[in-house]
Length: 172
Image: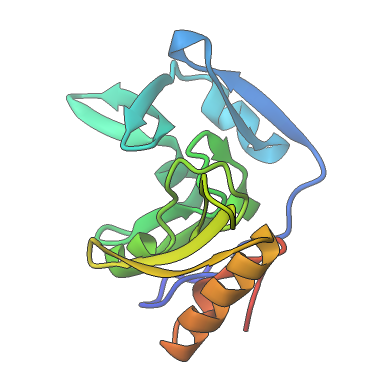
């Protein structure tokens, strides 16, 4: 992965994965190639906002599993592309700035796309974008994929197209 000032593209998913047991009866999923070096430590499930993450303590310091896997430099964040903080496969992790990470924040909506949430009204999917902590409603849609495409088009118009995910792959 490249650690420049822009978001890195995810790697293709490894064919084999393994689970590491965490506290609270939870597990995290990792690529098989990372399992041996990570599984020798005791990891905890820690909730932060809308998701859980795998962490451990060492000499009064918190170590996040996703930072170990990506070797993220200080000052950069690690984005879990699908919004699941316990999915620590390399293909689901990318190094981003704080601003870029905020763009892909997931709301507990059970949509598989960033910027899309389920809604209770006639058109069951809403598209939104969150920038600098402010949420902007983009529209409501009958189909989930239409909301995702609208979100991607809006992000593209704002110069952020390479940061959106639609159908599991990056838009360039």
